[in-house]
Image (tube, rainbow, N blue to C red):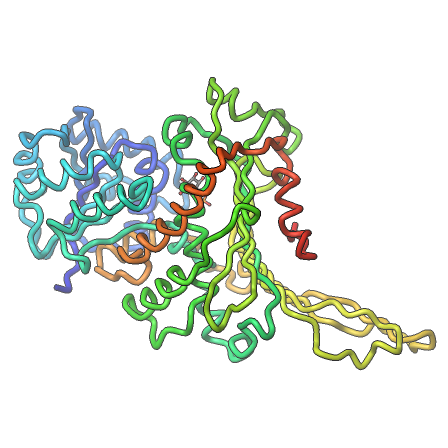
Length: 479
Ligand code: BG6
């Protein structure tokens, strides 16, 4: 059923995600006139608060996390907000919550940003209070479980009340402009697609490097680790977008059908194809930072860094490694995809002494959004001592190419799609399960070997074994 929701119910409304992302994104959408005049936002969480207190709470979050020039009329946004305290583990409070939500004219979108342990009781409560009808959508924020079994449990619980076409699973990387631009780059240009295969691509690198450490998420992160926190979702989604076949159109089913085929084609990795690490005290941008165990206050064998050599076992990608790496406390914050093309099959310049460097496409996702393609060019001169060639970049800085375009928070796009019911940038159940299947096998491999992460100094690019993982194949990580 197609409807634009006019009620938005936020579970976990006082949490970190709500303060940093959800409330700021909704406020920015409101400021741009993208929320209908009747849209009401109801926050709920365990703490008791009245509407006025919640509005004050929201105001403080907006002043902290949303730049002033994107806030619009704060008062009119705050007027959309109300609040109902709730203990989601007991059915009792859900009737009052339903009263607070009232009867939407069009429909209700529910955003669950709570601990996964609360998902099941929350769904039961929503069913009990009749907040699960055909005009209700359910949006789920990660983590969706810690392995395939627990993810299936959550998905089963949710699907008992909501059919898949009304379930919206967030992977906020899909809301990032440059991630969507990957599709434009691949499928709106004739240039790349004919070369986008094993015959012309040597390897792909995907890096998601962060400078932050634990950021106070002690319990969550130590149970999760980098593989579950970053690879299972964001990195595999990036890989799927790079590797998928062209969908027939830009719609939820076509795109997700192609992504899931890639995820299911991931080859099981072997021990020598993964490296894990954990940071020790070091320095980031000249600032001393403590080690993971110091931040945590105890010893732990949770990985804060992982590098993997992955393979997509299908016709297109036969023999093309996908090197993935992600970690906390690395030297800089950067998310990028590097597509390394092969050498030309024959160099006509070889006997003129010219050295060739194969073309390389670098897609910068953050912090800078840019696309850079290295091309070979002749160094100007009379070439009396032979021809000299040099690799020169063809650069597109998205910010310059689209000056004046608003740089939006990924959640703005996703929340708007949720309200309007477009699932294209949300993850389907079969994708999540294929991601977990692959990741679970890696974890089982580590457990079987009692693998302990290697240490690396905060501010470095991870353990030296990660460099060796690529260098063994003659590949250097792009830095
Ligand atoms: C989250 C992870 O999903 O993504 C965090 O749980 C991580 O650990 C964050 O820091 C990174 O997101 P972004 O948008 O800052 O790259």
